Image (cartoon, rainbow over all chains, first blue to last red; front, side, top):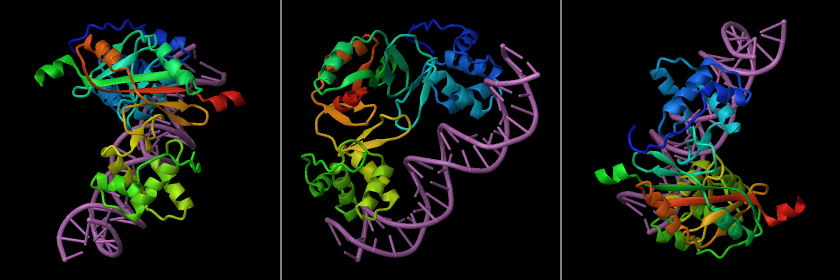
Length: 148
Length: 148
DNA sequence: ATAATTGCAAAGCGTTTGCACCCTG
DNA sequence: CAGGGTGCAAACGCTTTGCAATTAT
């Protein structure tokens, strides 16, 4: 858990839930707790395992339902770095992209995306009106490059 | 999605297979034929259905195996516009990105990506060495915008 | 109180695999 | 004619759902 000092100023779990009209339950708080402690991203299964590891007994179905609820209201980001796995992550507020290390799977946020103009222009040439975009960078992080 | 009979200037199926060291079989040629006729992208299941529609009897497993083989050798692109579905598409050669219409699912290729320098620079600030990137634009195409 | 939330286990889904048979090179 | 390719059906792994019990507000 060392490296980037990207302190993610996250709101208190309880607030996060209430703000989105979700009841504050032991299970949901536990899931948010795990997400907050996770440096990178995690799948529902991984979160479920992490909960078990912390002695928190939460049904797998509940983890799925919680993540679905949280991501549908934008409280957490659902990433799809891998072809057939959805990963979840508690991200910073604004629009941003991710840098993913292909070796250790570390995820780093790239703040401030200034690509909008560029993208809009290219899309316009094809008659498209862009509503959203995603950029994903895959590579090797400093640590992994060092180990080489 | 399937059904369009718009042919794109693609290399001959047989050549494409041979060039990648894959045996030319009735099934593989049929899959490539469907991909070539497809304006947008298609899932393995859709391709299987399209084959059935054309009277070509090809096992679903074979479709999956064929698409896996073709995409692993770069003959076709595997796109993941949707969270839990992999779509395949016969794309042009070079590095490029896609514009996807969120209404009709039309896919348009954006040729010539000149983002490398920009991306590499941003990644470098985080100690990353970028090996690849993907950009995906979602929006509304001209036709769908018109229908409003 | 009472509607939302949870747990469990069963059901779903798309995808993969084992294996005998078939066909290309 | 040898080894890759195919079909079928069973196996899989992840995710979702039905339903009764539980819990937040």
